[in-house]
Image 1 (cartoon, rainbow, N blue to C red):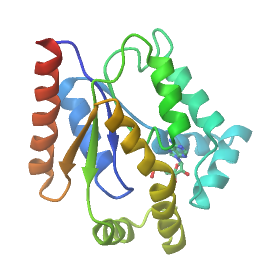
Image 2: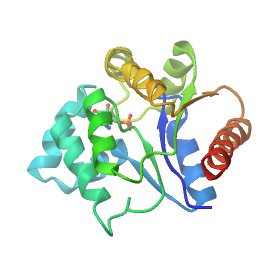
Image 3: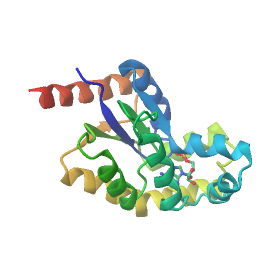
Image 4: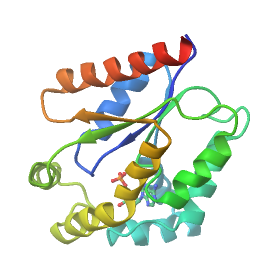
Length: 192
Ligand code: AMP
């Protein structure tokens, strides 16, 4: 079976990153978190990275042209995303989702996993992980942005018939099994 190309959607704190890492290991595909990429780049201190960091620290979305440019670079032939992958934290807006469809061309996404976790649960999780950009204000702002900018992406992928809803509450293992079940089920359908 060909390696899958998938996107993980869900609120910050829904467990996307942890699950995306396990899914990447399991299928032998690349895990790309745009948030991690921006955080790593911020350490480099370049002007572009510092610009992205300003948005991140305020809990705002980094502008689409910057984010799409970074992902486009990773998708080029021979780039880290030229085979199978799991994207985590991208796309976050319908402009980004559109750009991704266009960039993937003839080898589109196999499946979009929507990890569902209630708002109260993610707020608690984010508070307890205490990352530098996880202040109370930034958490609230990101959830607000999620509702406004990212929810429409779920509808976008629903229309394309790519979305699968996964209950994100449970042990790491339980949630992982649900995701793999959905991805394998989808691959079996595409192969048949
Ligand atoms: P994350 O680690 O996914 O929670 O991302 C941390 C921060 O990076 C976000 O709050 C945004 O400021 C920025 N970021 C990451 N991915 C994107 C994206 N696809 N579009 C816009 N901003 C992003």
